[in-house]
Image (cartoon, rainbow, N blue to C red; front, top):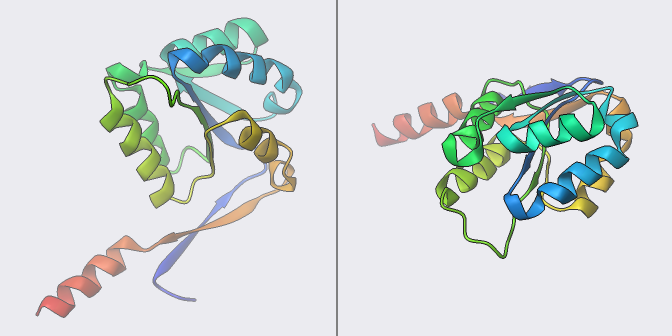
Length: 157
């Protein structure tokens, strides 16, 4: 096995983060309502208002974190680092400036670092939800950053 990478298994039951900016919350709630028969088989979490709205409309249990501007994006990012999020649907509004834009970019960055599938629009979310991997496990590969850092230190010597 190549020690430059670490493999993590995404199980059959996915841990899905649901995040939507204000201008996209209705789209997110409607999408979750249309797909609740699939989503009910997975563990859902989301940022503040988005999680509450989804739960109220669909009846699905959704673990709520803080709203994005109050640290919810960072909480979800921490859960990705801890291996507790398998993929994320993040409907961000490209036409509206966000006061917490650095947090948004940090969340998207950490999802890439940890090889977490991310849908930023409904078409991608539909493709992900209809993927064969929704009903089976999947191995994702992440760079072994401890090894990378050690290699860089060794080169500096």
